[in-house]
Length: 148
Image 1 (cartoon, rainbow, N blue to C red):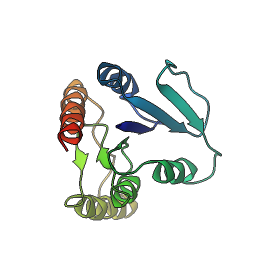
Image 2 (image 1 turned 45 degrees about the vertical axis):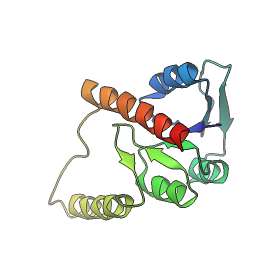
Image 3 (image 1 turned 180 degrees about the vertical axis):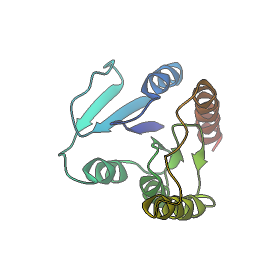
Image 4 (image 1 turned 90 degrees about the vertical axis):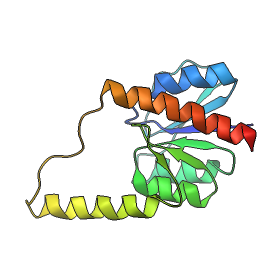
């Protein structure tokens, strides 16, 4: 059975995941550094210590083949892919073994440019189209896993 794990501390699409999971009868686990409200039922909350990467480490420990991880954290995405899980970013971008290395390199380059003052700001704000693409991609990912 497909299990969805959410890197929940800063996830803007939790409500969307709840709705899709309910439609498919899937279990959802939020992993966070502090308590947060959730709908209960098939949605669980795992609260980890506030240390660096504690939530990431727990997600990697829990997720495996046939599971979906929702995160905007590219290093976490790479670790989950190594464990056989499928990974979807908050803006609807699937991370795969083929593209996660490029994503990590781009992230590193942009961090260096910001640190050097060559470039300012961060990623564009979350938009309606991002939410729509996320829902579409999550549905496609679930269907692909079910097809085998």
